[in-house]
Amino acid sequence: MTEETKNFTDEEREAMQAAAKESKARRSRAKKSPEEQRAEGEADLKEAIAKLPDTADQKLALKLHDLVSEVAPELVPRTYYGMPAWGKDGKVLCFFQPASKFKVRYGTFGFEPISNLDDGTVWPTAYAVTDLTNADLEFFAERIRLAVS
Image 1 (cartoon, one colour):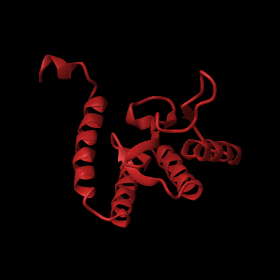
Image 2: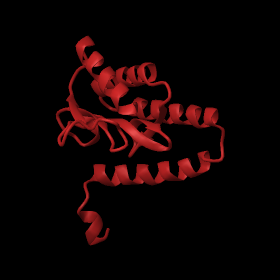
Image 3: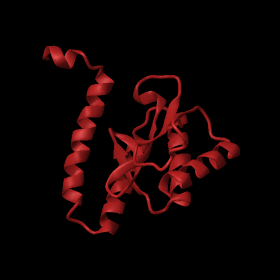
């Protein structure tokens, strides 16, 4: 192991390996139809959710997947550093970072810079998530709608 790789946690190295694998898969998918790309992305996302060791993370990821699919069906399911994500125009728009991914106390639902969330000079782009009530789902539905607009 090099000195540089010692600076990364096992979880970070795993995420980097997942990103490299995802990049290779995206290059391969670029030659396929949009329907095939969506189907493969959906399969990857569901596989990532199934691999989650914590059932709370699985529950949150499935609820978020259902919500994003309902609110913004134009977003393409995919993975992002091995985590569930949804993209637009080949780029990640939003993602779910499970608590178990980096051994932290809460998951995160976040938005990438392509999201249309700008509001003045400061706006939130990530949210800590420990559960999803109906009110939380409504809140995220509005954030997702705004992000894709």
